[in-house]
Length: 355
Image (cartoon, rainbow, N blue to C red):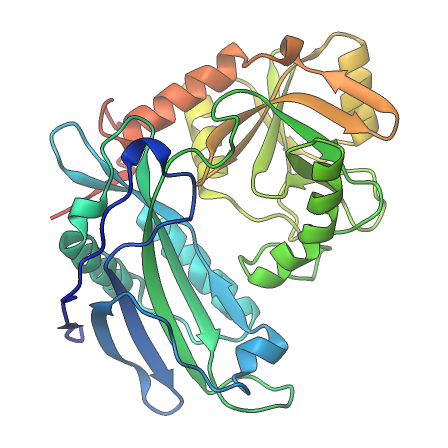
């Protein structure tokens, strides 16, 4: 395992008010950087003061979008331990994304070690106010100064940290979701299962239009038949139809969420029926009209569990559970956040203590 060079800041920042953090607005004093050079591999691992990055205008990431990223969180437990939630799964997914866009794989164990060292240096930035955490953004991008379509030979792997509150302004109050009728986010064989910026750029136009009609996010349909539900722009999605929880099956166009996986494992442990399958938007609205659609919620690192109170599809509107959070959504949120913050037992071994 390579050594990590450390350079501490001489100009610490003033920390923000923990009760007004928002999301992704503030960044800690330090960041981790590691370089890749073809023929050498990953090298020069270092923790340095947070600062702008200097890149050549011809850097390939600007022109051909060869980049990937992850989203994780660090939590401050009541006993002041620093906890991560299933970090090995994030690093596994990062390497899967790397594979899809031809970026050299990273060593997951070393990168978790590097993250731990960064967290120990910036531990005072981990907020302790209720429902706050330290968001972790690892990302990799091609840096070759070259204009021409090919696989890069040089890369940077960087980790930055950001103290955050709730992702959505609604917090745990149900959000309104707009079923996207025109645009397509991803198709099987494309980039849908990779966590890469191109997927999110493709979603911006639809998200902008949804917000213009006062909806928080977009629910994407499949890109071929345009009838099967896939995911929300920032979350995987679940529906309680009768007594069964239904979520779209992973077929290559949906991001395999770590929170999604954890929700399914929790539900299985509670003996709640779960189905991973195709579900059409027509089936969903028909279930609502029959009174069988009891709850809907999204899952993801940023929001954890986000109840969905309303769905709009064309001129049809489904208000779910009277626009209120459902019992299952609340139970899942309480259990997941309880485990993540170290307030509840962790029978699954999901939490990883930073020592």
